[in-house]
Image (cartoon, rainbow, N blue to C red; front, top):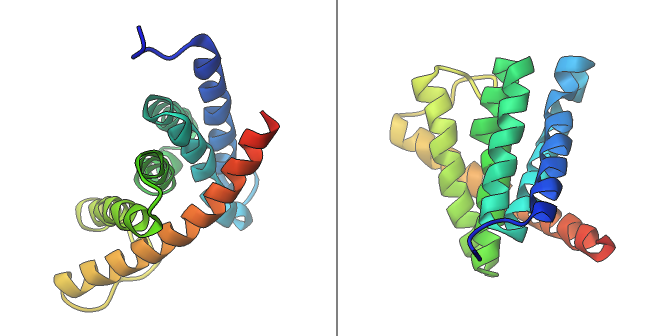
Length: 167
């Protein structure tokens, strides 16, 4: 029975998915001015993943599905960028406290996700082509992803500690 989530965890996970959904849909509902606020949609996924990997996966899937219902474009971005950052950072942090390894693991997953968006779906994630050959582009993507995930881990961990204090 220890493998199952209790009702309180499921409800809290649903609440986190709702918050993530709201952050991700701000530019769709209001204006593209709010596009940078969508990065905050990763924090509820991170919080759920820090509590437990099953809750994190649930928040990731539910929030991504809800976003996709209203905007396939934003849903795609959630699943391949913000959502995956929150999920991998939270799960990595759940299993280790070494910030370098957390950034490395999450950066690798984000690099793979961004590569899928760029090379498979032909979406310019950064708004322009990345210069150089494919190995150079992948190195640039990984460098960006590692730094971004490492910095986002600090912010997410700070917010996580404040949320848990209040609970």
